[in-house]
Amino acid sequence: MSQLRVLQQSHLAYVEAHEERLKNRLKAAEEHHNNITDQMNQLEQEILALLGETV
Picture (tube, rainbow, N blue to C red):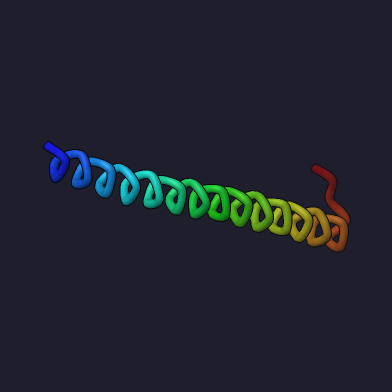
């Protein structure tokens, strides 16, 4: 029984650590996505301004 509990704890620790890494990666991906989207929108506005158009 003690061996089973050790195995369960080990597995749970691994899964929780992996879950935390995935959450961090997702957060970084979302931040990157938002940053790139903002930059593309700014560039679009600058191009439109140079062309004399408005949105």
